[in-house]
Length: 301
Image (cartoon, rainbow, N blue to C red; front, side, top):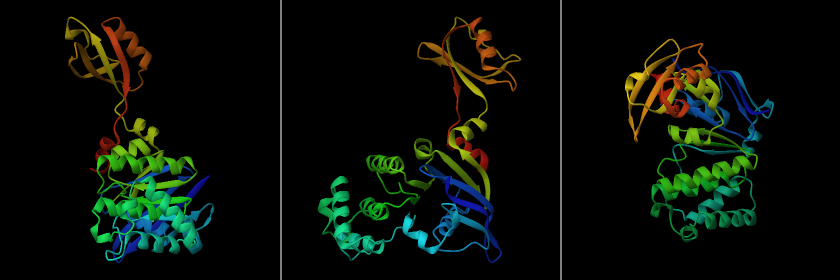
């Protein structure tokens, strides 16, 4: 079942169309990548789900019912533009934001102390926000976003400003929340994070939905049907293009040779492998799955 269903959502700002009949399904307990170049319409869709703005037409469902203002209590939203009061102390502000999410003072204080210990930031409690670096402030805002244990978490560029160590810490927390039943909508330009975290994705470009579905299936569907062959041979001429495959490249590789072959449409991998076995001494043979970065560039260029 989907936690969020957007059906033919349209949003215009004067003559500019931000979303043009966009429909997506976000399955429960998954990490859903919302992708697209700057200005594609991602943030507008996120704002509609958060009820910061409303669509001109189309519908949004939360847990199978039309989304209502009261559903915001079950959503955590970390916007790309962070917003902490610089003159307030960190602990004081975190408590204030937690109370806005409906936690009692005692519950908020207990949960915050646990998160501060977990992230190793206990010493920040009495610091003013203006004393924190961008990455430090972002850690605090991440904690206040997830503190009330939302069933839907929307993260807009959550890794911005973090060093690699803290990026991995946040990635691990995202996976922990998913394992505990939360759904995460992840809007990011970091394709490495998409490949590591996402189960499903949707790609929006110029206000329209370009692709959506399972990550691995999309990677396979948009590949060039290429395979990597590591082999040993006295002569490069042993691997040449034929009706089963086209030779893309062939080069020296760690005492052997590495060839990339584009398998002809309709040819079976077993046929290709059977052909190659008669020609060269095969070290390894594997399908090359395209990276999301390459698919992204291909589809939005």
